[in-house]
Amino acid sequence: MFNPSLTQAAAPAMNGFLAARAVPKAGLAVHERASQKLVETQQLLKERLNPQRRVVHAGDLIYQAGERFGNLYILNSGFFKIVNLSADGREQVVGLKFRGDWLGFDGIAANHYSCDAVAMDTGEVWVVSYEALLAACLAEPALLQVFHTAMSREIAHDRDSLMSVCTLPADARVADFLRYWAESLAERGMRTDQITLRMTRAEIGNYLGMTLESVSRALSRLARDKVIEFVEKGRRDVQIPDVGALSAFVQRCLAPVPAPAPAMLQ
Image 1 (cartoon, rainbow, N blue to C red):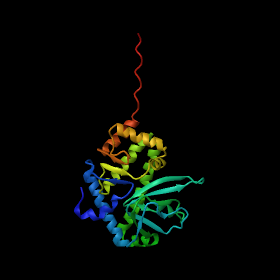
Image 2: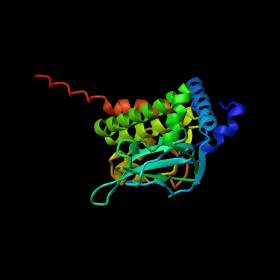
Image 3: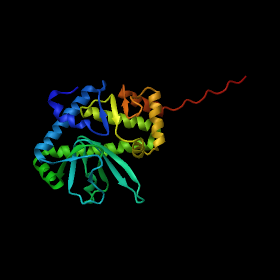
Image 4: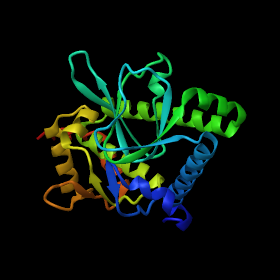
């Protein structure tokens, strides 16, 4: 599915939370258009903002809660988690970000970041001064549209994530989690019928509001239903023959159980 002219731009996105190796058949044209749009957007940002490039490794902090706000961060490669620390010291993963996403919107309102942004693997971040971005947007309407689109996408994804956690049963939550990330990778020009989970079961559970055991049971049920397959004993490499089957699995979990037929009178 790769356009040869995009290979160099898309290659860095192979790092991260999900590493992918095959192309989903459904929605191929849609994913290609989305991938092309991402490349064009990254090129515009690079040309108009001349961002500072920063290479990060797993565990590196991009920014942390309480730090004074001044920059926004655009992900050029790698995967990142947004972590909120509760008053009693518990960590809660509240967001997962990858190529094309922006970090730091949480710092605009109060002039300081409210969460930690942590790299989950080796990647590259583009650092952009917020004041410089605003000035550039005045001179370049297309850049302003990119900025607003990034904010809107984050709001929409946060809403969808909350809906999933609040309304879906455990098994469906995990299926929807895999579906979203596989489709997101495809939109970025990546292959998705075999993925490598970069998060532990405990980290996935933390993000989805589930226990480690519940995540493991959900993945096992998905495997029993042939929606996914585990490639090796380590159960980190997961095959997804059909991403659409994950959506169908979610719908089956939500389907009401038919009431038993009333007993016939003798």
